[in-house]
Image (cartoon, rainbow, N blue to C red; front, side):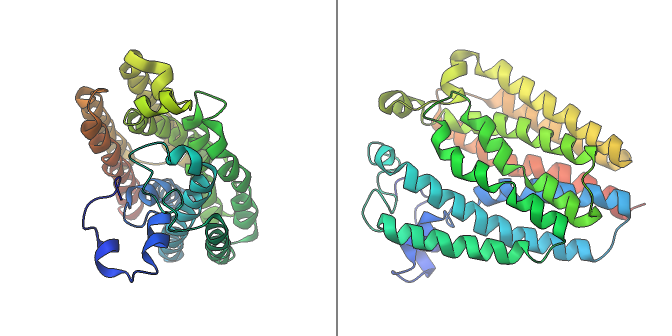
Length: 302
């Protein structure tokens, strides 16, 4: 596919019949499930600073990993069903399974149902509050693909969906929902606004032609100050969440390391260079893991 890494592991190892479905759920591009997973892991590690470390947190982290891969895949299927006509008009996306005709809409819906059942099976392994909280994200996941048609802020709605794990991870560990989890959730939303605005600059010319909206188009040449603001807000909200959870020096150190990474992203940002935008977008896995490393070291060195 035009927007996939050439000769990726999906193309090399999967049977021909499975290939379009793996591409439909973007298994060849793991950055998406990483960005969905990281807020879950943030929350598990930070909530553990309230309850104290225990081995169930490791099991929770594995379940969230499986859930992130499955639900990111489900989100991609929903997005591609809604956007199939737009994707057919864009060179980067017209070779995707649905617009190229390799997967029909009916087949995609059946595959989506199977993914959602797998996601439900993962969710049912948690406590009741976590199950109820998890269901709260369904409406956001469904409406997100429509937002680019009606608002220049679809990245904000993506942030609401992609960072729901900050709430679910907290309830899984503590069986409560307290304000530090909400601060962590807000931090994730601000972070998503930063990294997905960077990502959207790759598609802005096509977006103008087909009539869809994004923060990249809304900010235009003034994107850099907005990115700096989003990353700054993320840093402050992460620090607030750590304070609320009673975190220590190593948690703040992880946040500081991530802030330096954000500074590098801002200094490297070039809205005229799609390759740079993609590189910076993908680098946010490192940003998120720096925060997670600080939270985890703080948790297990007390």
